[in-house]
Length: 521
Image (tube, rainbow, N blue to C red; front, top):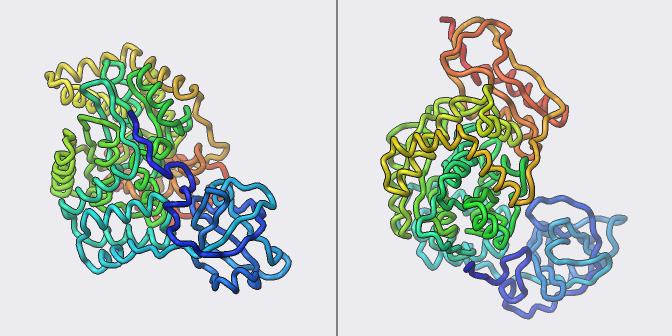
């Protein structure tokens, strides 16, 4: 049965948040309608008596309490005409976590010292961290005690140092221990994960549908995008609900054999989703945190066998075969420490897989493959079948050629589509992905052959067009490496929901002519 941890939903209970009895002061709350994403903000008048008596400074961190709820917030001070001296204006996330109503009273106090930051500083200066230090850091991150600036320091500290197996295993263990951990009645529990870095490549929904249709248990939890225009959770959210709790997740898996849920909603390795938010803002994804992220979620999800897709290419996340093999070895080694069987698959990352880049556009590719649409992207279909066959062979210990044929049959027969629809229905119902209202075609400037596709620049263009926040935004690729094109032929079509974002993406494309390289041959 899942383990229940204290403080696992929203704001933490008072005890873990504060271990002192600071007096603080009482303020009436106002809802400002201020969207600050995941960082709670509080606004107070610059002459607020409590600010003066407590010594609160603008941009400082303070603890807000309401009944048994508490939250750490960043303070901003305002001048006359916005707030009364006895009022505190709350951002939406602070308002929600404190569960307050207009004119309720809250208490503002100094938070206890964040002692784990000393370990983060040590890491910044090159020291390796112990299991205890990492456990304390991850606990504080999970309880939302770190500001975005402090989280960025933690991410940067790991990104700036070489991979260390013992430290990464300790980080993984700390991340697993901070959240829920599932157990299943099935003896064999399959999973598949891509390390990312390749636009499109939305094989996971297809693999889950095929493997579950084959009769295996595959409870798939996925992340949202870090550095790409879409993550699997973003893509699935255009077709069904992914924000499901543990109870519903278990029901879905029991009834269908699989699920396609957002990992953040079921709090498997909850610190990971907080760290991912900062990695997305910094556009970094360091190896130690990547390995800890992947393995911690698979261990927490109760998986026994994991197939890992590692795309390798000149503009992918992993640039060389040697780097791919090294990453694969590290993932296998950390997995072994937790009794997890890991099978890495080094794949071609020279160009996107599928045509769509962006949540809805990638979802449409997935549906075309499942529906055996003649217009379905063949590279996506072929790779999904290959991965599903490998996973079946890996878990069951059966001949790989036989399992590849079974995977292809399950797709051709419609069994995979039926299973996918059953999973979506169990998670809250199926809906067709949305279509962007705005589109703009980017064409070839001259005749020639498609010689190169820059994955990173192409992904950047899709993100500037609005993906993944704008679900129907992104781009559709019309060419592949080696294709012959004439001047004026379409290379890709940008999709957007807002004119400003689409124009921004077009300006980026215009300034980066190497996104798609066309030789004169």
